[in-house]
Length: 481
Image (cartoon, rainbow, N blue to C red; front, side):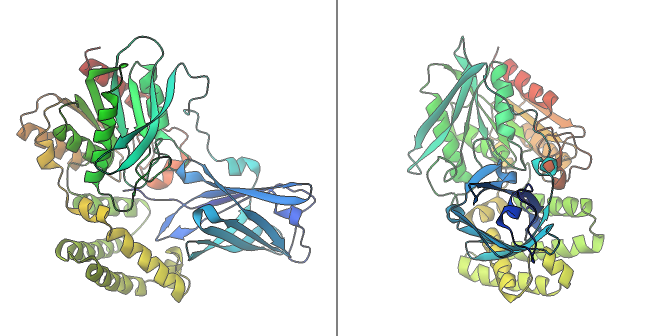
């Protein structure tokens, strides 16, 4: 499970002087602005670049925490001191009014009918650029890169991805990268980082072929992500294994899987179902049920954010009430009503400031946030994840396993999960495994101070080099290279 961050960055450099409420000037809306939208207590950062040519304004929105992906803007208009930006590709828009001093825009970000307050502040280009990502590979690359696609007959959709391998030699040991929870592209892009791009680059330079792919319904892959469970995602990985089996440049006896977070839950499922999988790497993979992880995750992240023990206990009590409904009420409509009652009571007990932090400013926004949270926990994926116990599957894994976790991982706490992964492997009689707890590393395998998700975007490092080398070395040894 991931925590999102919302900052909206708008590019505004002084062209023709700043506009004010008393002195509206469209050119004053060119440059850089930044702000934050709260969604259920989380934030998602974005950037809007506004430019002018021959007196006409144009803009592009960037989702910083989703790989800095560009979102086309269909129209940009200024009426007086108000700017309006439409983004039909995401069913979204932004409208805001410039302050008297010309340093802030007070407005509303709307997507699919959900309206959220978004205040923006003028910033410099350096502030808007954000932390560097020095590990992102730059062309020319010293290896073969190929855009590929292949079918999943079970799901009736097509998966798209990138296959990389060394230029010369072969056939090569190969690994499929499996992303964590939520709709992920082939780079597992988040918080301005592209972890799978960086990892695949390192592995390929070390002599390992890598397949990374867009989740179903994401990027260039077809299919429906919203209805998929972890088991469905496992079928997509099996389709990737079948695809690698068709390639002459892949060593057919050395095809493995490397799953991050939820991907570390999926990899053992695939390894048990397919005799073509030769090894698996579990990167912050779970060894306990989703319910147990969520309790621990919620407490650790809340504590890191300064919450009191009383607040943490109240939050867990609410979680337990909601999870009990999900475990006992199979009718999703009835469950939605019951969960809404629990969430409504919790929201009503919040102060005005706490409600604003959750994105609740009036009755309409209250209903939207409530509905959003109910839909999230009542989804097929969440219901599956909540009760799935990875231990019985791990007990059936007979291929070599590398399990790693950062000691500062607050999302999948390392002690209990690594302990239970090892215990399950031992119960199943698997003696070919390595377990590593990595000091000072967080859920993304960055070196970090606290491990809190709020640090992810501010850390320039995308992947710990020594951890990538640990993975590469283990794969090559396991493949007999």
